Length: 273
Ligand SMILES: O=C(O)CCC(=O)C(=O)O
Image (cartoon, rainbow, N blue to C red; front, side, top):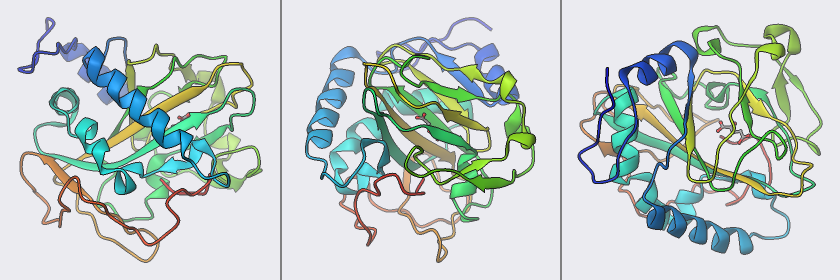
């Protein structure tokens, strides 16, 4: 299939083969600007304001669900350019599920241990049909700890986890090394403004940032509207119908309202995805 353009003025450079690649491998690297330049620059400038105000107890890797406290982020999370792009992969009925700034400061950025996102959602989703758009706020390279993925692992079963040092890692557990072949890992390197995608079941992680350059990604997570979300005592969350129709009987929150989840705004690297 040839290159196609979106109805928005910003071009989308995707082929049917790209969508197939994502389905087969559980990830995809998009080496184009996801957003028009001015819109991306505005997001980066807004992120710089938020991170500059981060309380001293909080780590910049742990800026989970910032859209609850900073509803202006919906300007980007629900942008036509982003939803047009996501629609190519998951279809027209789209729920915005979550977001997270994962910012590794230079020289001392924590590692992200190998994990599947779905294991952090504590059985609250009927199916892990979640796609993450990881938008590079900074250039993301092997040197500053770009994300890494094990292709095809989204087809597999649930993995066993073991504890890791929470001082050195964003989360306190990792998938045991005998559950997958780390030698197959693909480095997802990006220039700022580009993005990569991963499936909610794909095994992924990233190394510590020991370089002189900051590495920040904005993870924007969406799911198909046929996934039933049921809050439970381990996982409670506001979700938003981004586009199309609800197909699961979910309750949605109005985008752009401040939502107080009743916990510390920044988790400082705790297990919260
Ligand atoms: O930013 C990273 O290195 C990891 C991101 C991640 O785990 C995720 O988006 O689910």
